[in-house]
Length: 142
Image (tube, rainbow, N blue to C red; front, side, top):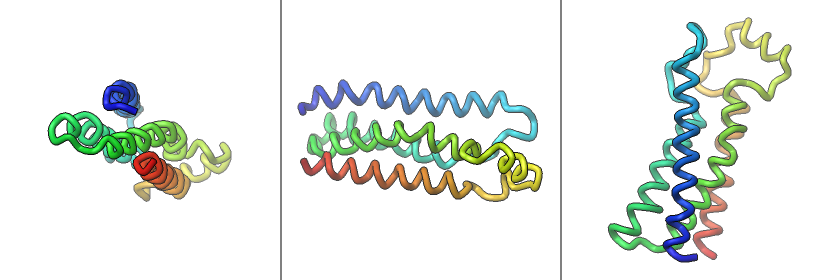
């Protein structure tokens, strides 16, 4: 894989990352009164970190200092994995993986915002991060 191919693949993943972040921000802007969040959700934190890593290590670094192509390929592969898991992590953030009755009970008991992230969100987000890291290392070494 050449640097030109890596650059051609970097554009779509950066676009998907920006669209995902824009979708979340737009949703929070139009959320009704008590449903607005005051913090950035964990999947969005991972998305922003992946966006910055993609721009810095896939686009800028090879142009500026001539970093190895294997690093750019690995980061790009990890970014694709993270953006693929992003909808699942956001669904876990909004507790969509629970049954409807469980979701209503947790909200009625005030369990909707005592923690930064729920257990499903933590498991999916960090699991996707580990898978993305494994893919990045595997791509970078092959």
